[in-house]
Amino acid sequence: MWMKRSKQPVNRRLRRRQAGSVRQSAVPMSSRRARPPIAARLQAYWTIHLRTARETAARLIRLRHVSLLTALVIGLTLALPTGLYVLADNVQKLIPDWRADTQVSVFFKLRTPLMQVETRLQEWSGRGDVQRAELIAPDEGLAQLRGLPGFEAAIQALEENPLPAVVILWPQLEAGQDLQPLVDAVQRVAEVDRVQLDREWLERLQAVGILVERLARLMGFLFGLAVIMVVGNTIRMEVQNRRSEIEITKLVGGTDRFIQRPFLYAGIGYGLSGALVAWIIVQMSVWIMSGPVSRLAMLYQSDARLHGLGIAQVGLLILIGMVLGGVGAFWSVRRQIRQIEPT
Image (cartoon, rainbow, N blue to C red; front, side, top):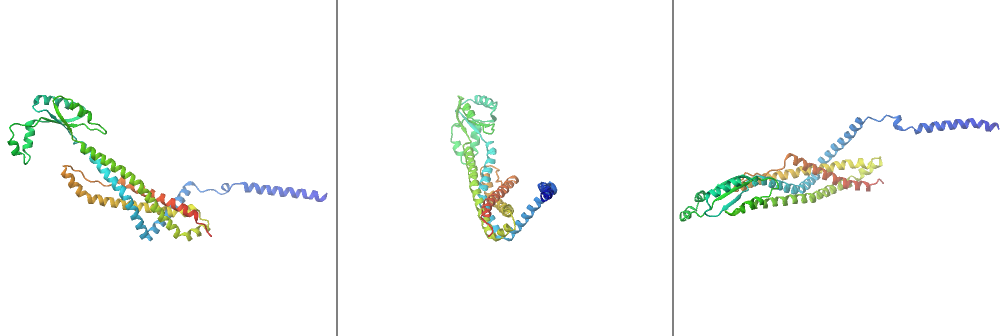
């Protein structure tokens, strides 16, 4: 009995100590140790990424031959769709200027009184879809024809003026406006013999511009996939070359995210350098072709010039290159890192 009574206080003391230790261990570590403020954590986060970016850039510079070759391949891949986009953009810029020169030539029947022609001229000038109208009388047209070389002798042999009165209409063009209603309204006039719309070549040019633009989008998508594959293959070889380093890093507790980070920055660097190479190639092509294009435009009495990429377009090209490089690196390194385990 004495032994049982002596054990009871001891057991109660042991239970109280165990309960106290359990309560103490149940207190979270965050309440016993103050967490750093958000600003400090953000600063540490950016410091780590900045240091990784600097180390990756230094490594790419050390391996300059591989980096330059990869950048050239990516640049050539991006240059073709970018060049097609520049071509389509220049065609679209030419169309509004040349649309302003679109004319509707109205040929009246022979021997139509000039007063009736002037009446029709005033009527058409008041239309909302006509910007300007001009009358070319038969005598004026014959004088213009006489001024052309080679026609003077033929005109002198004529007994009477064979030219009709002509009214030139400059339509009030707006985006997507159809000129067929104007042509139909003029064609219904009894004195009109024929109406000629001088814009078929412009519609063909616009169709070519739309075709080139869609081709540029298609080529951009396909060549974008090619850039992802090029960067992914390059990163795969880098991972294999650094396999021992990755295994040691995993042995000391390095996470997959920590190991992937420099390879992701390398892919972004490849995309950035490739986009810059593509921009240089496109700008050099524009500079080489500017002279012939200007001379061709002069033959058509136009001051059209070939334009390259603007600042916003260059920024977009660089952003696309960096995104494609990052996607290719992430796609490759994620699979490779998971397959590497320390032995």
